Image 1 (cartoon, rainbow, N blue to C red):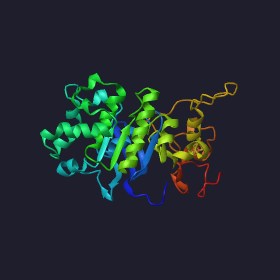
Image 2: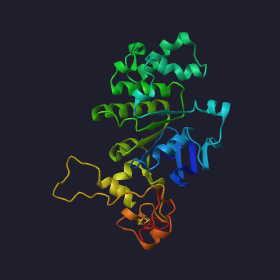
Image 3: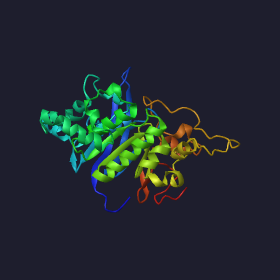
Image 4: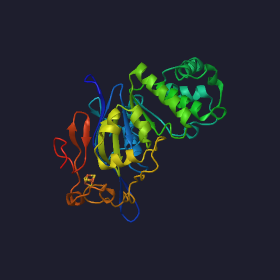
Length: 325
Ligand code: SF4
């Protein structure tokens, strides 16, 4: 990433636990520290249940962390309440996986797009249609769609409406929670191209949650790899395939399907199951699946360390300078 990047939001040592049956606690996020920069995309990738959505829900103030801070321009937003929280919500918006679930089927597209503006009294009702048309054109849909209902649109068109709705408040950060996962691959590509174009035009920071390694690295300036509630590795998107070092990231790269795959070579898959987040092991969370596991890995959790500019890793295999032990 360029040297001129401007920090917008920083999560510091964020932990989130939920009570479970039998007085147990489920650890969804453990000591997560990540940064979001203006005009840049931070992708978060990991298997289902790794805590990526929980982390982003804390970033958009839908959940409160149990420990740690979420600093927005240096101010902790994790404990905001009432009017302050409501005002802050204009700065960070979210696009959900399934727009059909996120919209009321009884609302016209112009009402869906303009609802946030009306909530904050930023436009009058008489301005709705004109504003909706402007944002529909921004997401490359015909302005006439303002008068439609969501059920008369395709999945890709509905997701564009979701993006328009997130844009109307002119937020500084938009979080996309698996926003392209439910779409056909060809539609996915056009939506990703739209997101890249809008980011360039508006200099917005993006948080992009995805379980598709190939997609997330193509879109993200930085990629954070998450496993069982912890960050395993953070590195530039362009270096994910060639420069990743963590055994879990490498295993995920090996699992990416390639059309030019040599089927004579054995397919490498990750052995065994991830442990339950109700019963996290002492030491490295990846220990029971890691082919490089050492004795220290079973007793000491590796800290996330900077090994190069823009490259952090949590693994006992690497020393302070990133040298392999
Ligand atoms: S810390 Fe140990 S178990 Fe964990 S990924 Fe590194 S080598 Fe494997």
